[in-house]
Image (cartoon, helix red, strand yellow):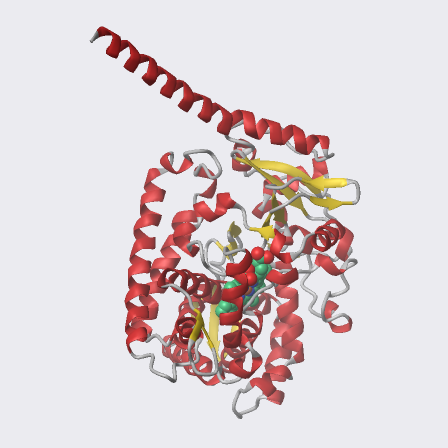
Length: 525
Ligand code: HEM
């Protein structure tokens, strides 16, 4: 009996030792080995403290003033926002250059803000050799799931892309304008009522544009009515705030970090489950009525899968995959488009000359006629403004990748498993690439060079990403941007409210943390 007790004690002791060893290995030894490996490949960076990595420096939000003789400040609004939105990167860039390694918990990230390095890195790895950081897959699981196009990898990505692509082809996109105009007119009607009594009104345009963008994507992408779309939108927006509002207070990348911020973890899981349930019921309802001629929107295409000439299923998507795709497209659809439109209205409120020029162009090109695909393509000044707004305030201020094999760039090797953080915002605000007027709003810089705006390097301007994983919704986003702006600028004028506080923050996207409060005036007297 005594012997059995001793054996059990020894077994338990061995098990505890094994767990402690595993913990020590995961939290300290393995990251330390990777740290030395990266160092031996010539990558420097801030010194990490495992298992927290460089968390403490990232939580330090104090900014360094730039030696900034060219930075712009219009009515107290400075567009030199890299040091305030990403202060740690701005500080580290000064110390370690435009390529260095930093640590998110026990995960190494190669920071890249050098377009030439990005070009070579991109050329050295085939699209399928890129993955997405596992640490973010885990952390953002409730928002995008594992199968959303922005998260899925390899064959899964190829299949999803093939199924989804027709929904974003020009032949399909051309059919959408009416729905977009209809939804935007609801907003102009609401604003007209608000403005009616005193001919002007202070409005948080970001909030209102966000809800109509959500209505538009739910209607055009998923065939949903206003109420259903609104429910999903409210929950996704709430989840974004849970995940990113106190991002640096959470322990992302730290083993078992989700247990250290249980309130956020539980809230995100609850919202994620509720959204999944809602989407499941929508999918089931559509599956029941799919028939031989399914609706050709995004959801219809996903339900249909790939079929042969006799309509026999060759490859399909499971409900879980469709749910994740719906979340990814829903979120990307309303958030990125909304931000581009809202920041534009802020710029046009500050720069009345460009506001007037766009209004005149709309009058000349669209007049009282219908807005369709061909008309929109003729709004050239609006193209210039959109490109410049996305340069200064890119809706997606960063891109991420994970090396699925060693990547050789000249003599340097990026070891397998290294995560890459591409600082789009940093490159768009880099004086070396754009010159002394880098922080100024100058849409005309895209007149001569529509693709790169005169940037010194072609990879220095990437608002819609780069390589095989470029934005799937670029055409859709451009159309949404133009239709909403055409409709709003034809009916209202905009100026900055004295209550506006310029406070862009990195929130996965680049958001105005205190909204965009503008004075909206009716043009119709
Ligand atoms: C002005 C608006 C938009 C901007 C600036 C933008 C920007 C981007 C960027 C930079 C990426 C690449 C991220 C990376 O490299 O990992 C991306 C990917 C993506 N975008 Fe957009 N986007 C916009 C609007 C939209 C819209 C309206 C949709 C859908 C309706 C959409 C759907 C997607 C999807 C699904 C991906 C993932 C593509 C993949 O990984 O294959 N985007 N977007």
